[in-house]
Image (cartoon, rainbow, N blue to C red; front, side, top):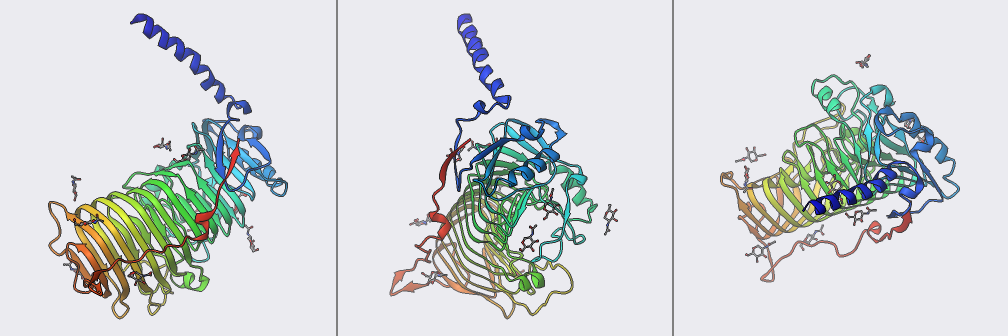
Length: 469
Ligand SMILES: *[C@@H]1O[C@H](CO)[C@@H](O)[C@H](O)[C@H]1NC(C)=O
Ligand SMILES: *[C@@H]1O[C@H](CO)[C@@H](O)[C@H](O)[C@H]1NC(C)=O
Ligand SMILES: *[C@@H]1O[C@H](CO)[C@@H](O)[C@H](O)[C@H]1NC(C)=O
Ligand SMILES: *[C@@H]1O[C@H](CO)[C@@H](O)[C@H](O)[C@H]1NC(C)=O
Ligand SMILES: *[C@@H]1O[C@H](CO)[C@@H](O)[C@H](O)[C@H]1NC(C)=O
Ligand SMILES: *[C@@H]1O[C@H](CO)[C@@H](O)[C@H](O)[C@H]1NC(C)=O
Ligand SMILES: *[C@@H]1O[C@H](CO)[C@@H](O)[C@H](O)[C@H]1NC(C)=O
Ligand SMILES: *[C@@H]1O[C@H](CO)[C@@H](O)[C@H](O)[C@H]1NC(C)=O
Ligand SMILES: *[C@@H]1O[C@H](CO)[C@@H](O)[C@H](O)[C@H]1NC(C)=O
């Protein structure tokens, strides 16, 4: 026994060395790591090359900004990859560059600074007109940000970005900001984006926000925030075309995924939809919000969204449509299938009265069109209310199709299980029995299935290259 314990101790002593060794930032410590990416890079650097210190206390804001400024010169010469090795790297906001890879190694944590002077103030998004936090027009630039970029990869072998959100949540709750809180990762007007294999925790507000982007892959991401803190949405594709979100695990105080496209008169004027969006293999826990929300800001339109193979646990609702008079545009051609749910307040939830407006300048006559919503093949257990479906007076939500859904109720369910107003559509094999506005439909005496597209959106066919550190 003693010999065995001694042996284990000796083994420990031997194997601790490589671990310690890897903490020195010598390239050999990580050169073996392979990872899939949109593109591999010719040039390689480590944050310590730019004076970075990973002690969790020293500010690396200057190191990151210098690194990005130097590495941006290599964008036209095969691009660059910046490694963040094990350690705790405190930093304020910095901007990325094109043809660039940020690789956050396992054991590395990028810690967001709580010093507001390390966060530049930027203008509101043109499609929102105002900061989203409802205070003033300015907003803090996001922690990791970029505008007008192409070919950007943010990845790792499960390294972490920690937003240290407590400071921002507390100050927000006390209404002490006149600026909108920063997001964790935000890319604007960019294309060919990959965000993968990292863990994001405790963002001050939303975690991942691609806005006005094309060709976006978000893959194998873990996002964890307390379930009772404000606006910590997981992933928010906003006025983007051709986006794939897959294999993500999200626990959050707000929607796990919120699909958006601008706010009232500003969003209508900007007119950029979110379209061609595929979300698959999502696991979500969000007791106060939705698995996937469509809106509430949807004034550029949302169309062609496919959502499949989703697991929801202790979540307020599955797919929730949020809109209001004043939003204009549309939410249409939405497909969702193969959901497994447990402990839900609602399974289906549509709200046509989400009356949050940027200012008094919205047009109450700008009515959204909500149509062609297809849900199929779902089970839900321990449900309080099957469906709350509220369209808009004189602007009903139409073309709702729900098939093959089995819902079992909680110990204290709502008496009315389906409450439908201003909606129209059909159902087939749905339990408990739907409302009269969604009657059972049979085609030529046969059961009907609500269709899901059989084609792919272009980004689903992209094959990543094999790169290495
Ligand atoms: C990052 O980009 C924003 C918006 O373009 C800009 O205001 C800010 O100054 C940039 N930050 C740095 C460190 O260059
Ligand atoms: C992005 O590109 C637009 C259009 O070319 C330009 O007006 C804007 O200044 C650019 N912004 C940044 C931060 O590069
Ligand atoms: C990325 O995550 C996937 C799924 O969890 C995993 O199979 C793959 O090995 C990870 N890649 C790296 C480089 O860690
Ligand atoms: C990545 O790290 C997080 C946090 O430590 C952990 O919960 C998750 O399971 C890890 N994911 C993978 C694929 O190893
Ligand atoms: C915003 O707040 C800061 C500090 O709290 C203050 O100095 C500034 O005047 C405020 N700006 C506006 C527009 O209210
Ligand atoms: C069922 O849902 C209720 C909330 O409605 C929750 O308190 C309870 O723990 C859940 N039961 C199970 C077995 O998950
Ligand atoms: C719903 O229950 C019926 C009857 O038990 C079953 O045939 C069907 O496969 C179930 N649907 C799902 C999505 O599990
Ligand atoms: C049904 O929904 C309508 C419209 O949202 C609401 O006014 C009403 O109170 C709801 N009824 C029940 C029983 O939940
Ligand atoms: C939804 O499914 C129904 C029934 O198969 C089909 O008629 C309808 O076209 C589908 N909607 C969309 C938007 O594909």
